[in-house]
Length: 131
Ligand code: ASC
Image 1: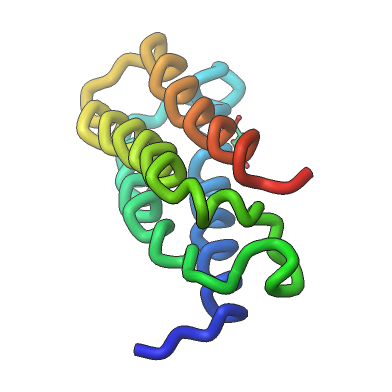
Image 2: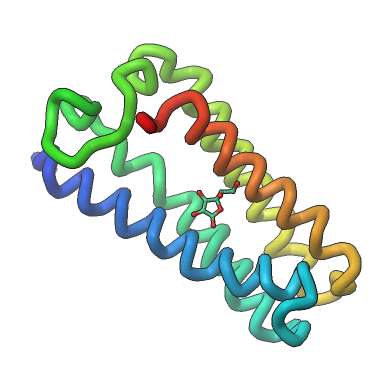
């Protein structure tokens, strides 16, 4: 299908908004700032894993900063695409790991998962997102 750059940008921002929507309450549980709720954790972890797998599709050519209004994706994301893909896969791996552990993980071990997921967000943002 013929995808419009502005639709791809909206799409990926929506996916990232969804990731943050689910990650926030998971972080709060890990920190003990919200009650530990295993069922909710599992649902949010499954959502994050699914969203992680949906994210890459939004990064189509012609959607870098400077090419389209509102984009903060640096052009280097499209030229260093192997590394960009590797960083995306790190997110997918980390969210899949939490999704598979979520039914039995203890509250005290949630922080390690949160650090792995948050670290993968940050690694990509540090390299490929404009300030
Ligand atoms: C979030 C969010 C990010 C990551 C990052 C983790 O909730 O919006 O970009 O976590 O802050 O370091």
